[in-house]
Image: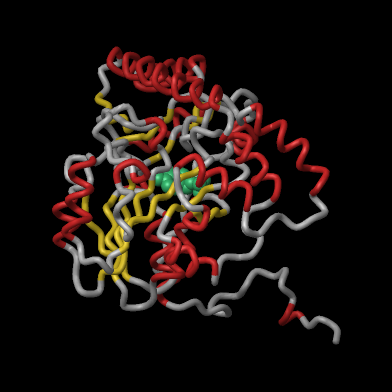
Length: 377
Ligand code: PMP
C-alpha cells in the first residue's frame, strides 16, 4: 500500500503521538562532552583542544591500531558473539574464569544490561550523587527507583549509603574513583560496607579510572574484593587504553550472574574490530605505562598552573579533576569554547561554580591554562 502522510516516519512526530511510560519521561538525556568537530564548525576554528571526556590524549595504542587494520579484512563476518579471545585474555590477566567476564559495547552497555537483568518496577537502587549519570538513566529506563545519596565534601559516604538500604534495595552503584569528583574509597571502607549489606544486594563498583589511581589504599575490586560474590566490577577500554571511539568495556562478576545477563545481551554487542583492538591494547604494556605517566605528569603541570591563577582544585585519583572557579561556571565554560578549549560543564551534575577538566598533552594543558588566564582577567 502507498505510504500515507500518517505513516511517513520522516516527519517530526506531532505532539503526543508517541507515548512513553512515565519512568521514561522522567529521564534527562545524557549530555556528552562537546565533540571537537562541532566546536570547530560553530566557531570557525581548526585547532580545538578537548579536555572534556577523560579520554587518552596519546590516541589509541599503536598495537590496537595495527590489529584494527588487520581485522578489517574480516568485516563481512559477524563478530564472535562470545568475545572468546578477549574474555579469555581478560580472565588470564586478572586470574578469573572466562565465564566471569561479560564484555559490552562500552561499560555503558554493561551498566544497562545489569539494570535490565536485575531490576524491575518497585526495586530500589542506591546511587551516590553526583556520580556517573548513566546509573540513573539505566535504573530509570527499566522502571526501577533510584535512591540518591549526596556526596559529603565531594566523597562518597558509605555509611550514608548503608543507611538508605531497605528491603527493596537490589543494587548499589559505587564509582571508585568517582566521576566527576576524582575521590576514592579505601579498601577497608568498601569491604566493611559490603559486609554490612544484606547478601541479596548487588554492589557494582565502576572502576573506569582505576589504572590512574596512585593511592595504594584505594579499593580495587579485582585485588581486594575477590571473596565477595555480590560484587560486580566494571572496567573499560575507553580511558587508559585509548579506545573510547570503539566502545569496549566489561564487567567481572559471579558466573551465575553473567549467565543471567547473557539471556538478554544482544548476540553481537561488541563488534569484531573492537574485539581485536582490545585484545591488542591489553598486551601493549608500554602504551599503558606511557599513558599513566603522562597523566601523572600532566596533573602536576595543571595543578601548578591553577595554583598560580589562585584557583582551588580538588585532589584526584583519576585523569580528571574539578576546578572551583568561584564564579558562575557556565560563563567561563562558554568563554573557553571561544578560545577553542572544551572542558566539561558541571551543570548537569549540579555544580554551578566548577568545571571538570582532564589531563591532555603538555601543550594542550598549556593551551587550557593560557585560555583560562585570559578568560579570568
Ligand atoms: N563509568 C564511568 C565512571 C565513566 O566515566 C565512563 C565514561 N564516561 C563510563 C563508565 C563509560 O565508559 P565506556 O566508554 O566504557 O562506556
